[in-house]
Length: 124
Image 1 (cartoon, rainbow, N blue to C red):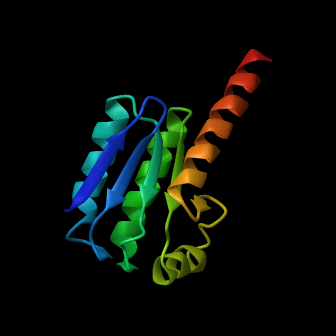
Image 2: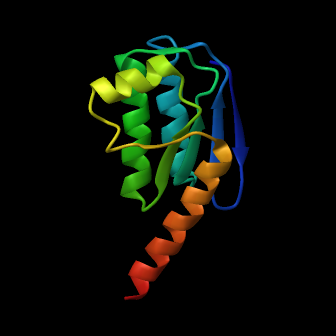
């Protein structure tokens, strides 16, 4: 699987450099999500701007990442979704479960907002 990881203090950006997120790529992606979560990266931005197609196994890997982030108080943000990928998410009725934004920059802003909201809630 071709991808890049950019770790920052508060979040990690994973950019997928594949045209298809399918059964050949999804297992490696799931493993990477588990590894990052175990290392303490609980705010992830998954940049899918290069992904033109995904199937149910690709969607499953995204849902695993979402569950891992949520279970540690973090957030998964999907960015750069192409039409086919967004259509599959919509057909699966997951657009209300997943955080979807147009750009990585907006994803970073959403993660910072989530962190502030979480900190305020914890103090109450």
